[in-house]
Length: 423
Image (cartoon, rainbow, N blue to C red; front, top):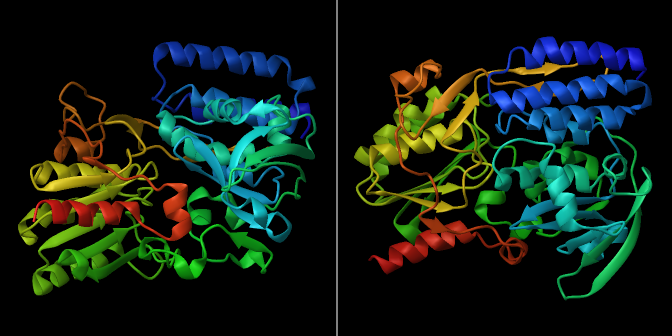
């Protein structure tokens, strides 16, 4: 990229993103405009990676999870070491590695080039918006890339870095890792897909996983299936997993939910689990009526499984379910990926020269007070409002690295324990 191309992209950033987005608080917008002006003033000394990270930080000032330069897209723009990291609690752990580094599977990141993992995490938080627990799910994109780390002042070289790990057996391992070249269509760039242990086409047998595919719990099998269900005799019920709330190729969500309604009416399960842990959202209208209907279809307990990946329309769906029967719905897992009030309903724009993708947000969602205090809310959540005091888990059941490695599903274990306790 030339400085002239960067300036063209700054102009597009102003007109196609900043002028359209409504999610910034006034002070944050003022700061964003000031930072953009400073970036424009030093473009002659700015590298492409520095340019993209600077824009990501400007976007992140909105502190709105829908307003973002997606980390998964950015991960395809820059180099990466031959490891894949995932967040468990406050730690980054190795969940995939090439054969020569398979001994690091499960290891906790301690530092990179002498910079503590906490410093890397805090820097990564400046690159995305939203609550801290969701921001941390995207820390992998920075931590895996010497090119990005170097631009952020966290690595001495853009081509390699020295990583310090603590292995599962407590040993400390220092390893200099050279970065692999950029792979623009790398499926491993997406944090949720790498969490499933099933091989990817580009693995070609050269990668190893912390969780063996044959040991994966049901929730982490069939990563390409978007809507699934199974009988659950262990809890006298059924489990329905929704990994998105929009149509999948060859599988309209409306048809699946209609099938689930018929199946519930036929089988009459005592209890029901709705797994939304890997659901990044879609169209909040698609599952609304189904969620509202569940308390009338199921005579026993309804459990909703959540995580920081539970996002956007998945949060809306959870809100409709919780609102329909707060005394019978139990939320299990981790905090969802956004607050009860957020901005959404925008779209993604791509800057012409750099290829940087930016999502902006235009309409408010308020699930705490049903948008009663606002006039700028998304129409469907005004017409079909949500008012819930919280969507925090009633039962905490995070996926720990030990449970993940062993092929256990902590949330389903918690559901069974709760049913046994209240039997």
